[in-house]
Length: 301
Length: 107
Image 1: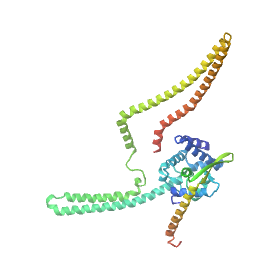
Image 2: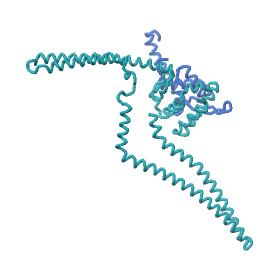
Image 3: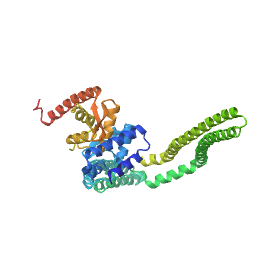
Image 4: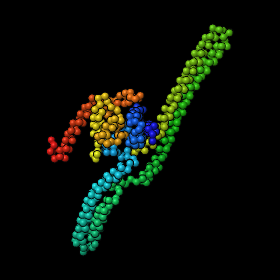
């Protein structure tokens, strides 16, 4: 990726922040590339990471949420900004995960020990029960004790052996939210909310469409009015010319007024068209921004 | 380095680096100087500089260089006060850590 592509990509990624902030950030990175020199361009881009990452950090900085992460030897480290790491980083990550696993395995064993103990007391109670009530009810208590005991063993086996190959200990994400479940939930929510959301969304879209049409009509009206004024001025001039011989003084006055009106009309037309070209793209950008907002937020989370 | 750098320490290092130049200094050099001490990624510095600027610890101005405008950063009075605070805190902190490491041999 070249510096130009990087800057263009960054600019489009920063579309949603204010003009001032965007200009600041772009100026900074333009300076940065210029000061690093063309010979270091590839190195700088490699160090900065993808434009997406740089943009995400700029936005996070604006929200004042940089305090959540930590600045490690690999730079600012925050899960939100993690992306495909370089091999060296991957190795480091694996090591730290292993460390985390070791720590968890220690806890696991401790829990297992505790569970084993509880299994043991259960067995003890069960034996007592058997001893006390053997003649009346027979085995249930004893069985209970036996079950507890196996549970204890089971706990031992499960907790004592698994930590090394149990991947879920090393990861940080919440353990029970699966992708399928999330999709199901979203579908359910959509089904329940559809009768309410669909009309509202329709109304919103139609409302926006209406506003756009109204604005368009307004501008068109302005342009046409101005054009009509110019045409009227022109025709007054024509009328003046036809009366030039019959009533010269009146005709000259008419021609003068006609030229004035004609010029005013022309200027107004030009101004209206200029206004259109200025406001229409801005409006369009605003609309596109609105449409993109929900998707971008989703992507960021 | 195996010790993580928190936001406050990074602020402190950035302020210290910028304050070394009376005339002020620019983004690329700040990054290079900060990276002499702590290995932060290059994209980390912009949000930090921008925040310090908003907190009025840094001020910026543009100066012509090489036919273009280069943005310079300079420490404000508030920034100097903040830097002194960080410096004091760091002295205390590092002294205590050293004392623990060296068993109270160093004073």
